[in-house]
Amino acid sequence: QVTLKESGPVLVKPTETLTLTCTVSGFSLSNARMGVSWIRQPPGKALEWLAHIFSNDEKSYSTSLKSRLTISKDTSKSQVVLTMTNMDPVDTATYYCARIEYSSSLKVDYWGQGTLVTVSS
Amino acid sequence: EIVMTQSPATLSVSPGERATLSCRASQSVSSNLAWYQQKPGQAPRLLIYGASTRATGIPARFSGSGSGTEFTLTISSLQSEDFAVYYCQQYNNWLRGFTFGPGTKVDIK
Image 1 (tube, rainbow over the protein chains, first blue to last red):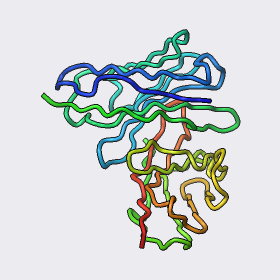
Image 2: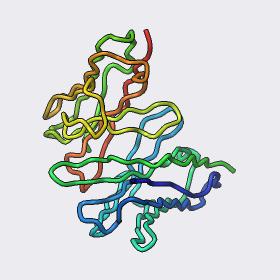
Image 3: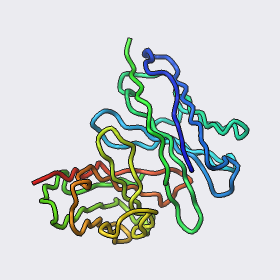
Image 4: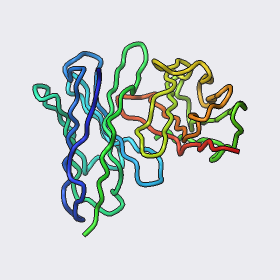
């Protein structure tokens, strides 16, 4: 059974750095043709892709947020970590991690439950 | 960057009726398009990928069509559990990331 679970702070202050961890089970981060994405959703708004990392350690970032984001993985711990620097109230959102499977096509097929992060002083 | 638009923003439908949702890409994404359903307080659920392939466990009343820049999600006979927000997502150059549409809310007429 594939599961993903996000963890991290519920509240961060403006200018602080946010660190979120996605712990996966039911698949390995070293599996070929697998990756993990981070996606966020401000309250009442649409989904926004942030970053992803693949089994070969290839990474990609949202163009608009690239300077603030770092994604990494620890295969032995089955974890993917996202850091976002210089947090602002507009970054208040539910942050999701999701599995990517790519073969003949690509699927973002399993999502975590999400974690709500509020940015406020 | 490829921009996704969806129409209508809100669709009011009676149970048992057919719902047709549209998604448009600012440039061709071939068939690299997915649809998701999201209910309040829940994570999105993958419905369709590759523009027309149903994900595992998705009922046959959901179907996707289109290629290039114009796509459609059809729900043939709306059930009570189908009232939700639906997002399209392109992944044409997936190594460089994804973009989502703004969503269509399907509510009860």
